[in-house]
Length: 419
Image (cartoon, rainbow, N blue to C red; front, side, top):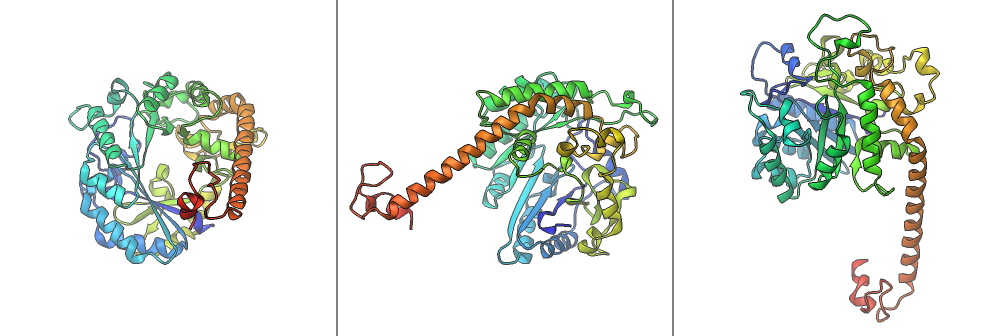
């Protein structure tokens, strides 16, 4: 296991949330902790979790804060987060905090904290009001769109880095181009789209796609959504908007490797930390079968080096003959195990979204090849240009015209910026 790329996904308020989204996969997890209706991480658990994790990783430390709704913890809790990270951090460590939120509780104080400590904020937004408010309602059944957009304005005003997370459901799956234009038209250029598939409230029976809940989408719908979104993203041929799936695939085609969790060869790049210190193998498998231990009783290192976690990690490599013979296996590695098992199938079963990805891979393959070549060529040209500029400046005298073309003397222009 490469601990340098290992991260923790923390649920400080467990499944508690001020919204009641119909499609939320995590809301039922509150049944794991029936002893109380209000779940909040204690200072003791917080300090132990941060101390254990930061002692394992020498350089890049990555915390993800999710829920439920992590904003329910309050501002003081996250001030303690920063305090403990500074307390237990070692020289040379770089700390990253990612924060996924429904954004309804963000105000100026929250935005200042996010900005001051470089939190990357993910905002859940499913599209325009008529789409977003269909499922994303509060516990009183009231819409949340207007409050979310107000919070986005607050983040922009404080220059907080944020991206948009959209759940592709049965209400927006046919509107890929419209969603893209909606987000980009409002200056939202860092986007992530997650397909919705959950089992409906009926008895589990293996192999029946009719088990999918009404808000879920079909593989055929998702395949078309990805192709339409890809066309919008490509635009004039050189995309200027970040879409997580597409950018990750572009890097794969450029030879960088597969960065998406769902497309990696094995699972096991992070663990979930629940409010009381319970550790689970994955956000989609917070269930008794994949409970790994509690960090108040066992160190985080012992937990992630356990045989049970290794078993979970290796399960993804179990493929049917269909997958083993597929030409796209090296790209997707069978997809996310959740999408194999969500309708009651075994982990060896092909992904529910397998037909969607096949459709999209075939549709985009050649354009990804061409785009990756252009990106690499641009990088090479920029590197050569930078080297030539650097070498030319070494030969320029203090009183000579600046090579940048400003018309100023070198000493009055770029010379001072290079020291």
